[in-house]
Image (cartoon, rainbow, N blue to C red; front, side):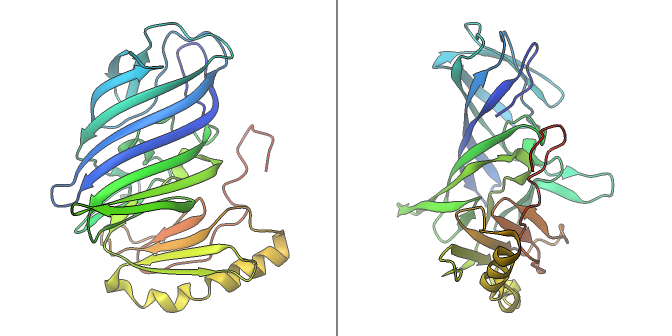
Amino acid sequence: MLLAGAVATWRRGALRPLGELRPATRHLRAIAAVTATATATLCQFDPDLRGLSVQQITVDGRPASWHRRGQELIIRPALRLHPGQRFTTVVSYAGVPSPVIDPDGAPDGWIPTADGAHVASEPKGSPSWYPCNDNPRDKAAFDVVATVPAGVTAMGNGGLVGHTSARGRSTFRWRMAQPMATYLATLTVGRFDLTRGRTRGGGPTIDAVDPRESAARRVLATLPAIVDYYSSVFGRYPFDSVGAVVDHAHRVGYALETRAGRCSTGHPQRPPWPTNWPTSGSGTV
């Protein structure tokens, strides 16, 4: 993952947010671990994070100092980082996330709902719930682990690789192995009815529908056929799974693509295919 620093950037790596959400209080307690490779000498670097309180930061297990300037979280590791050095930064943070209000008045990022949160990070909402360099050229693989009260579901990107329940809480583990831009990340939390299936090509599908939006099921039932059709046009579906989240979020009123899925509020649309792959200046599609 690329994170803009004072004198250099990080190379592509992995981001692993681990969090616990209490919907009743809207309080999020989280740890974000970023593994990256320095491309030049680094004495500090500055991911984006809005509002949330930072409790501790370590770089390769050593405590790091930090200060904040606007949404910039400026981190100074105990030891200077050298070109080609692989390192892991761990940020512990907590608070009540707030959505980002776009110029047109629409909210994005972490948007609270009655039973959790609707998370639609595009275009600039990612720093409302995890530290990142909010730049579409800075891509990473994601592992997201979320613990919520029993009966509540946490929907993330990629495939659901683990789900456990104990002592009145449920933990969901999501993995997106293909690097993606930060604005594509989601962690939508609420009470959902889940439907699992497979496309004709064998790929798993998972849809999460708020019971108050049950009419969306008729549209989502066509999702496997849509994937099969686009496979015949564009080639094999490039991700490990596909799905959609239909939430009851009054303040949102739009549908938005995420990587390997889609978040919407009562009007699901076709899944993204080659969209969100090109990046200005990256030379790839």
